[in-house]
Image 1 (cartoon, rainbow, N blue to C red):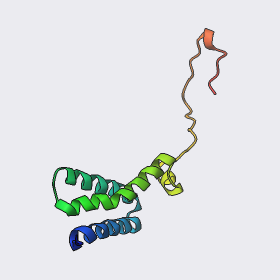
Image 2 (image 1 turned 135 degrees about the vertical axis):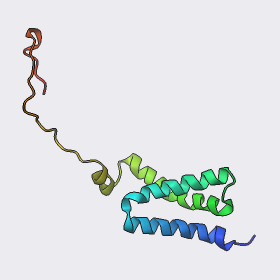
Image 3 (image 1 turned 90 degrees about the horizontal axis):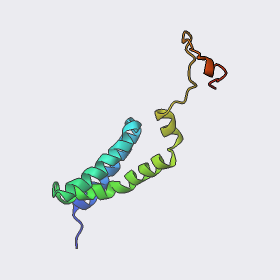
Image 4 (image 1 turned 180 degrees about the horizontal axis):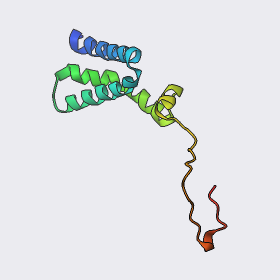
Length: 110
């Protein structure tokens, strides 16, 4: 069994290059690029599209996608949480008039 240069070495190099480039230039796209490479690689292999190269792209990108899925399930890193979620206190809006019916006049919303 011999090593095929394009399929066996090119696919992991392509995945590594995409990971490094998106991490440096567009960090928000890095997670989605890993999902696209893994899903696209396995879907392409399932449909016999792209041959061994596409299959190996899916195989090589699976650990990266699994790490991103684990981080998302666990709660994400500080960068992920701060870039996607911004917890701010609710703003009080003046001008809203509260209607009171006699049976609920002692009820307060906290």
